Amino acid sequence: MVTNEALTKGDLNHLIGHFVDADRNRLKNDSDKDDYGDKLDGRIEQINQTWKAKFGHEFDAKKIDDVFSDQFATIRQGQIGNDPQLAAAVIHNSNQADRTNVDKHEKDANGNTKGDQNLESGRSIAVVTIAGDKGANITVPLIHELPDSWKINVPDNMSKMQLRQNLLDQLTAVGDMSAQWPADENQAYRAVASHVLLAILGPGSDIPVSPVNGPTDMIAK
Image (cartoon, rainbow, N blue to C red; front, side):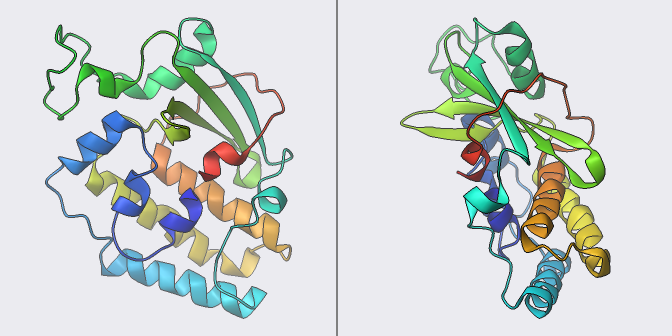
């Protein structure tokens, strides 16, 4: 899942694979380095060591049903063309998408064809609303890709450099507040997940959409 990938030392491709086609292509064409760097890897190591000391094992949020319950996340699902409010929330992060290409096979400056945007009428979309750390909600826009996977639509202005810095900022906050981590491990996992999602989506990405209860494992795929 995304949170586990973010706390795995190595490179940004752990996370980029969870982004929609257009964002994956754009970030792969970003000339900046892929690696996390010593500072971010060091933060991840510190969090894992502290987590192990507190909970008896390293960070591993695989218990989806326990950690990401309906008390933590709600979902609204629909289709582009049928659900205007939902579509507006999902498409918001694609505001730099080049939709002027006549030929669907023509690539834009980011290496994307028109089809890579996945914004055509009838496309399945969803918004997961996360109960974030300290009561702040986080809205995660998702686009369905074939054969059957849900991908995060990150802001078009997100670069590798910005993603790396966001992760460092958010995981630094996680590490610095280790003395205040909840005693309940699931609650602690949820707090860390909130910080990871904030890093991926960036500031100002939250768009209010009325949620309904539903499956929450989309954010974990």
